[in-house]
Length: 314
Image (cartoon, rainbow, N blue to C red; front, top):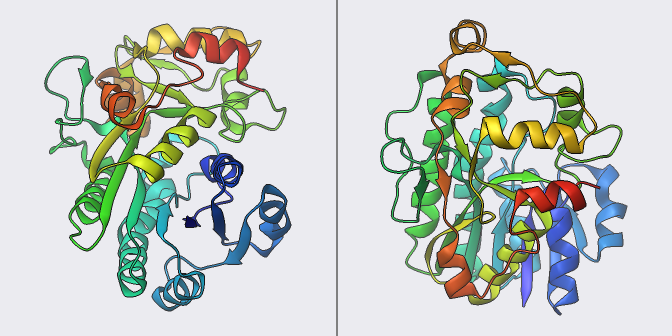
């Protein structure tokens, strides 16, 4: 198949391109930066520079590519995890998940694509219910005010993509990424790993928020399976061991050769950074990926972050 991969130069895009090419697919990969063209070409994609927030730029690129499938992996989540400015940092990604999604859908419909696969996020599953949610769960209807725009953007993406009637629309709620290109890796310039080494990524309150994690290569292989075999709807993609922050974060610090993370009372973080980061660290729910395993035949290489932290950070 011919795949139009929006966001091909990002962490998951860089994993997706070679996996798709290895399976015989032709990939047209977008980037915002001319400087990344040669890197994409080296991965096996046909690179194209696109402004995802410009509907004419998107329409022109998709029309020229004439793809069978559009894969939406657009985010602007790069830079240090600055809890004090979380809303501002996420603003560009929110636009990509709303306006960018709409532009890709319009362009795809115009050329008759057969499938749309888009990136969502499992961090904001509804805060009621057990510690782990499946695809029947919904996104949190009443998120903290400081991060409400981000949750609304995810909801817009999921509703828009899975609601199309002219093609198969799939939204993938990924767990938290780690591994090469994610910032949670052993590379000396890795931003988030650097924050952990400096003990600037703390356990907030009791750290009881349940997180699901997924190695970036496993996230990509699940996406390939969704492209090839996925049915319309939502899939969850993470490893098999959801764990509270106070359990997995010290293990990640140890794997990075760092001292244990600091512990900071929730009320201090709430005052400094707002209620959103506190919610993520203390109330998040994990996800189950049983549907992806059952319907897509997907098996993660790293079924536990414990193994992934030891073997897959580099």
